[in-house]
Length: 270
Image 1 (cartoon, rainbow, N blue to C red):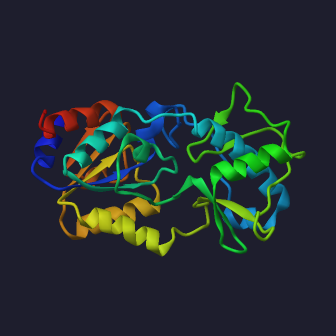
Image 2 (cartoon, rainbow, N blue to C red):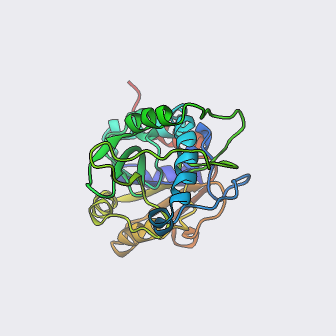
């Protein structure tokens, strides 16, 4: 099936949709794959209304951020960057909150579910770098260290047993409530962000889905853009996806090896 996928992609402008599966080879777990951790994701209204919930979230998120910042792009990320550099990829709409696509060299990336690397005040709207807020957290909580064994989550959180002593940072500008720029459960994808992702998908003559089970509504809404325009869809994933029956080609396999093979076939050697 990989050869069939390559034949379909050849000579077409490729729009890319990626999910958590593309980052598993970098050490970030998938949501639903084999060995995926059980998780209790933060709900937006709970975060806003409960000080205890914010304390638990920020404690776990800080530990997760420290681990997230230490991972590196893998061959799948680098293969997509090569395809973009060669002018074959119109852009990437990613459901991931890491920055591994950018660190691999991709330029046109839309983060559908936000990203871990910025933090915004819900009161005054000021945005800060995660590094600045992480430094403030460590000043307020000098005792906090990353344990050797942590249950890292795909969204950069870490489940910890207790956070009752954790002091939550306040907005450096107004003292308001800070939130990482990731989309929580119960929170809508910002309209401008979704419109940018939709434009990425609409610009392709073919859509390449890499490492997503397509169980999340935002991904299926984006693929509907392609389906309505009768644009073929190629899926590369370990395990079944919600759109297998609608794909022109379905490749069962890891994204690192599959995307590398695709890039090797489509990008002319120097």
